[in-house]
Length: 189
Length: 425
Image 1 (cartoon, one colour):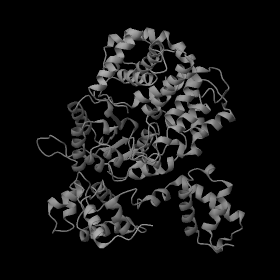
Image 2: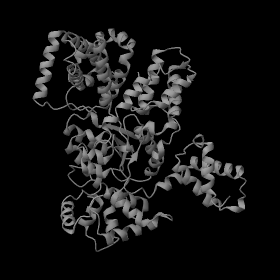
Image 3: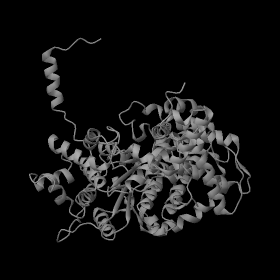
Image 4: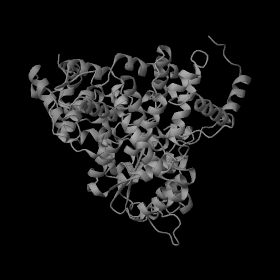
């Protein structure tokens, strides 16, 4: 076990670290533009996006907005937070502005993408497999429909399929039945 | 001849661990997209999905192979042309990290601002979708100094990572069966399938060359064994020895700074695999004193792989090999006469496959691949200079003793002069 460093040593280490600042994570502007694309409240990139963003807050200068949109400069925290909350509110329910803020600054894989769960839910083929798993579990374990909220259970099933890398019906094995049952229907004995 | 995998329809049902979902999602945005994966993983397949989901027709996907740019001016000119004509299209930049720094920065600037470079008046780019296919994570390529930070940043919104085949164990046999059915259909033949031993061998193989390697092995088996009903591990050239060799590649590199890469595990480049396999062959042949002309075969294979890369065109092949068209035409008859010997030698099958992989992924700039191959083999032979005679080493290089001496002197002089290394892909 190493000895606790004294205040002098800590101060010296801190000064060294202070001089070793990592470059900013790649892609802040690209992710901000991606969020603007998804929120769809300002024009597209070739139709005057700059003016659209400037219109959100008349106090912003064109040069600083250009740096945010094109040159990876992160806006002051206060403005970033408000802008993200404004945009994320347009994405519909289930989006966490703080997670989006962290994703914009650091990107994936440091921060897992805030849209990952949406990708999976919208896939028709995967929803069909989830429905088959749902039906098989309720049949096998005799779970009555009055004992669960179908929408909640269905979403749990989709989430589990993502975690278990189940993309096709044949990926679902007999050994998956029990863990799926215990997560999808936690109140069932 | 092996066709490009991405030109075949009806790919196997394989979500590639979410890459397909992500491509479909990003198709609804204007974001420039990086598709990251080792060689042969199916990056172009993902690009096609993205393009199709965005409503693009097959002929409006334009592949721009950055390995083929001859100079900065050539790169800038061809990119400008593609951008200007890109309305409604998807431009797929293959290996943009192989472009020069200035060309990368110019492209980055245009993608970030959506303004055309060198225009007299500010001109917006047309509504063009941009995809870049890259062999490794953006951070790693930047750290290696091959990808400019600004270009990486433009592509860093939400990169799609295509996992290697060995990370999708459940998909290996699906791909194998699909590829077999595609290749049989295109040849008008019928093969019942793989033997259980072949399936077992396929599950255990590391597949560093991924889906492309799988296709290469199936195609070769069909070409070598016409009329076969079931494909065996021997037909697929999947021997335990090869698996041990491939696996052993990973050990010395674990823990090194470059070990972690996209997907969280090390994938050797084709050049690294070729180096290892050739080293083993040299060692084996010297210890058994079996004088196979590896050097000549290596040059044959490089020429053939180059011709395959350029669909048999002698002009671009000659330029790539830094030689003349006349030389190519002059070499081909002799290469053809040695074909039978090369095909019949089981020791040569793996190096031949890896040469094709290596040549396919090389950039156009740098020294001739022929020179790189020759230098590699000389280096491997000279590692045995204490135990093997000059005559035997010369025979393995496929040259006379005086020529061996001459090439050795040239190689040493080049090493001393710190000649710029050829790109090894």
